Length: 146
Image (cartoon, rainbow, N blue to C red; front, side, top):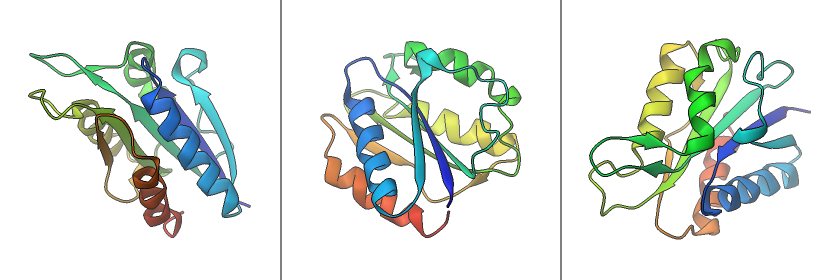
């Protein structure tokens, strides 16, 4: 059975809800899923023992891209996470009225790709209050690539 790690950073609870919806969908489809809040993650070797890693962060900031506060320490230390060659998917919540809509998702995708991760599927960018059906539909597109 494939084992998936989902690490999320959420201030308002939106990205946490999306993480839970993705996790439940993957579990219903036979995967072993572990969900961790970025605030509680030790980044060094965090991918060890997992076949895939999902990373989710909301985006803040008007003038520049800002990752969710708890997720910053994850992002800054991704080079120690052991993502090279690992399957990785990225997602996040944002607000399209901001200049950098879901910019944290773009930053994450760029960073993990540079670290040699195998990006599976297009990133998920949710505008405003999350539609959990959208999250589940996205997870379904990723499922076949795990």
